[in-house]
Length: 157
Image (cartoon, rainbow, N blue to C red; front, top):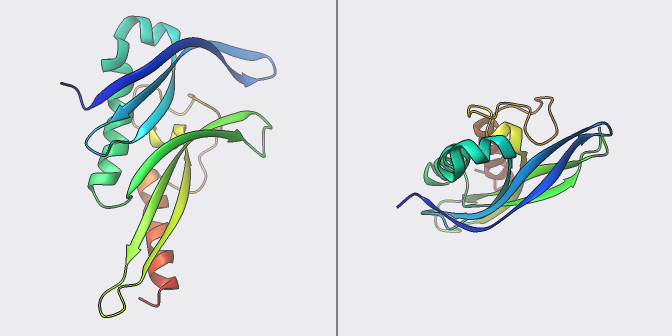
């Protein structure tokens, strides 16, 4: 059994710019073992040729790796308007948690919103999949580690 379960899928169109649109398969799935519910937009031709295995597996691997490695506690997906392009951009929201040492055991958390192209940068889709094409702010790992270090600093640790 793969480390995900497709919950819903439908064909739609993704708008990359005022003059560029692409037929995509919108796929909502649950990844395991974290149980994260995520949605990805896979180019229709990629979905037709490789289905869930080739399209979702690389994405699941990156998300689950971040959670299993302790960089994040959970993940979910959402869309928001990119302030630079005014187009919808796909994000994964990772929750990063810092647990301080006893006796106080302070617990702080924050959300780290990472554009899909950063999450899947090392996969077959490359940086041109889902808006926010420019790479600023570092890799997925860099962003999650920076958030953790900020929480640790905020807690006085």
